[in-house]
Image 1 (cartoon, helix red, strand yellow):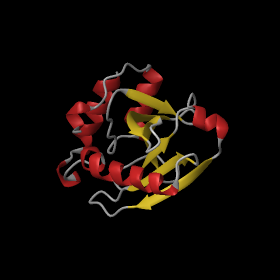
Image 2 (image 1 turned 180 degrees about the horizontal axis):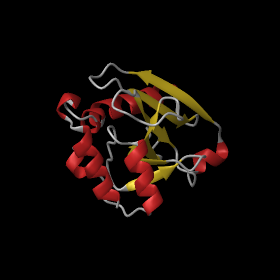
Image 3 (image 1 turned 45 degrees about the horizontal axis):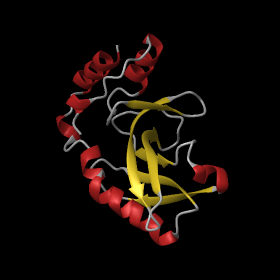
Image 4 (image 1 turned 60 degrees about the vertical axis):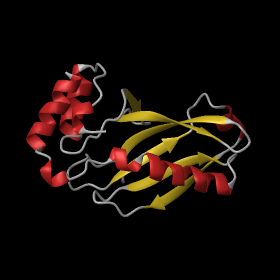
Length: 162
């Protein structure tokens, strides 16, 4: 997705202000949902459907977060694509989750961080990450950050969430 497709979900003034100040320079909103972490921080995100080999259908919530989870995102930050089984999933109630990381070399220095239920077999976890890498990563990244004007991006983000 491109910057012109920043999600236009309505947001409160405080949320809009947070997004404008904390995410200015590096906000890649794909889709129209926002996710809150345990501190109430908002991340733009979307959903990714996945069917296991056994036929179980999962929906992974995908959102963006800084590598530390604490530092405001800036042009120079390395970012994370965070995947998590949604709360209502039966899998989160029946088994613990494990973290599976796949380091990737990309122009924008992204890391894919996937939290996947242990109900998935190891080969299915690998298959899922492979599919995400092939189908999503290219769409998630802006082709060339050197052509992104931070002031223009800030204005787009503010306008989208005002």
